[in-house]
Length: 107
Image (tube, rainbow, N blue to C red; front, side, top):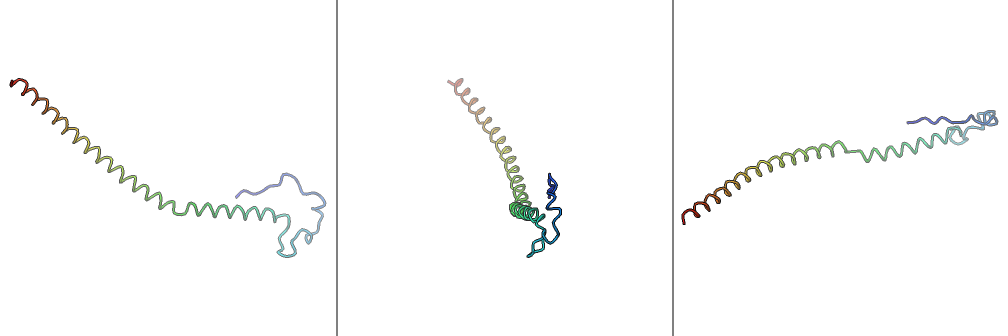
């Protein structure tokens, strides 16, 4: 978490205040750090919200990797099937061509 570093020094009248004047009578927190403390609380809330978003991301990624692997295997099998069917189709076309030649020369 980033630490807030003020750009300007505290005014002299605040520096001269007694510690009792700088502290909340209810909680004992210095008014000077209360704002920074509240900002850190807001950052923590935002980070908790972000963590909820990322919860389960490892499991989701694992499932997606498995699905991708299965799809890759399917794709490879489809390519093999396609090549086999292309070969058979070429054989049928060649057979039809030869058959047509035979019929042509038979007449």
